[in-house]
Length: 433
Image 1 (cartoon, rainbow, N blue to C red):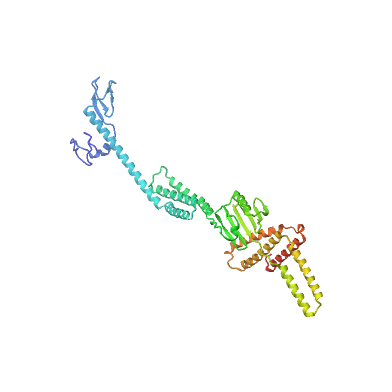
Image 2: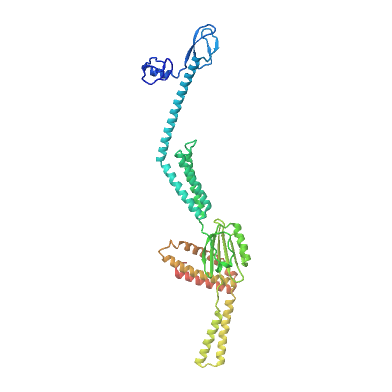
């Protein structure tokens, strides 16, 4: 409280002012506090009418209530003291109000920090920060650069969101840290998609075997399905339409131009050594399937037949004592029949015979696999091989059905039907058709 006489601040419950000695009435403390912010007045003599007037000490000009004369208030000692006191009261009041506002803001900030620390969002943000950081290191270690960058951005976003929620980093709007946490969660979608796309197996093209007869694809992603002595198959991923056309050109440069058939999704051809190339391009999945069949090693069945027939004829002539001329005639007759049979077998178109032989060979492999698959208790573990086998089965069946016996020669048609009948019988015996 303040002294009414001199305006000096005095301790509470004081009976007298320590500055001027004036008596202080404790009952007027509330009134004094209320009046402390009121304007301080001083008494001055009007220079025009010599009347005594009371004016505000903080003003620079006074108006006489008696004559209306205006005069400038001189900064006398009394006026200066009153102005100082008035300004001091105002400054003290402003300082007190500012201090209270700061204390209230500080208390509110502490309450918000405690509430955020106990909230689910704070714990979730901390967990996601560490998870994203681990994902970033894992992605970079696996050379999945784009996925690693996305995970690193998520880490920074979650970390900043937590720091804002703890009010370590200032923010103009309190909802910013919530928006950042939501953004970090939304980035999980592109991270997952990118990680899946970049998780494709790295293609390691063989340096020997049948793969050596083929050009190496430009794409570095995919897998080798089969790498046998007589058959090779690879599935190359991330292959564009231009890459597919470029690979066809590279195969042509390798000599695969015999009986070539080309379309926007497939290419088939053979080389001069009889190696059969099949390309199939899936434009939707950007995948190129490459398969190469080695030429079949054929035995000279005709020579074996001639040798057997001659041996049997000689034995018959020796045992029965038949005339040598007759035996010779019979032997000649058998050789003639064998020669006709050999001529019929040799008149089959080489390309057709090669396909039908490879078709029958694959069907034997297919039947063996399906029997194993049907009797296995681990069908889930064989699912990948099962899908590949069905794909090859569909491809062979489609090519086999494309042949028309009405357009074939008699030898081709006979050989075609003979192979188909054998295959169908095998399927029937295995109960797979």
